[in-house]
Length: 130
Image (cartoon, rainbow, N blue to C red; front, side, top):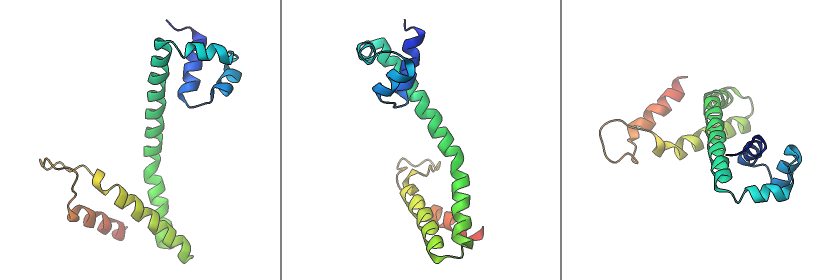
């Protein structure tokens, strides 16, 4: 069973902080951390906390996504500078096209990697109508 200091170190490592910085923040010697890293239980906790950190980060980014898209749409439609409008439209187009194959279609088909042109056309119409 890991003690409180080990769990603290696991949490810091799981967020991607370099070992030297982990040692400074936790006041645990680097050599001790490297010894702990040889323990299966320690590594399992780092992995578990790393997955928690990744999941919470992804959720935070996803929740902010609509705000980013709304701001890009505002810039694409209303910016005075053609360069700003072009950059905003390029970002929107890049994201739309790079994620086009990730759209879930619940129509009973086995081949979920192909997206109907109608789906993309509807997305473009929705953008134009805003």
